[in-house]
Length: 135
Image (cartoon, rainbow, N blue to C red; front, side, top):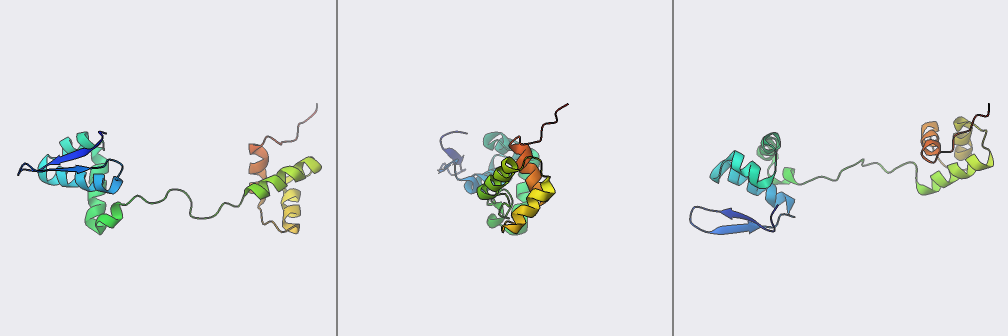
């Protein structure tokens, strides 16, 4: 996008918008698409798809401008595998490389870390700590 987005109104007055202001950009696109330059010209100007334009229009009609604000992405839950827990899993794996993930999860529970077997498996896989089979 350009440095500033400019909306040209019929009375000759211009209104500029900072492209970093995502909410203002969405509202400007909806206004221009609906009232001034038309949908397809607005899509080209703002870089949105037609499907996204109509999705935003529907969201706006349902709940107003507050519903157009971008929401925080990702899970709202705190991760179970914190750095400290990962370090404990790695430490335990090095101390006893032949114990199963069930045993590691059980040992972690005994020292106060609530971790599932699957979390232990993921950590072991991510750090490449699988047992090597000697043939």
